[in-house]
Length: 85
Image 1 (tube, rainbow, N blue to C red):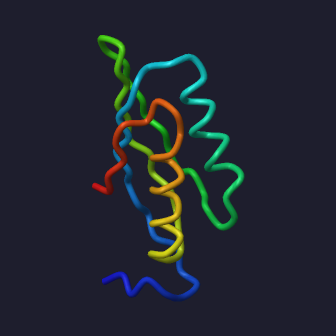
Image 2 (spheres, rainbow, N blue to C red):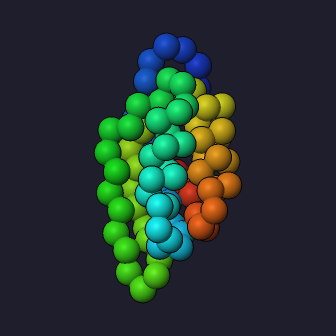
């Protein structure tokens, strides 16, 4: 059970959906690489009919950081939805 506090890292999968614009993947990876104490484990993105959908697996240490990441991803131009799986 995740207490949301401590020094352990937890693997979290985020589902991201949005417009398939030029540079969208670069914007997402750039945002994640700038965040402290966030490790990207995998990125899997598919595109179909002008929309992309993908799963991001990240290592993160607390729930407040997770909420911040989700909010920042949602604010990227072209991203329509971000949800934890």
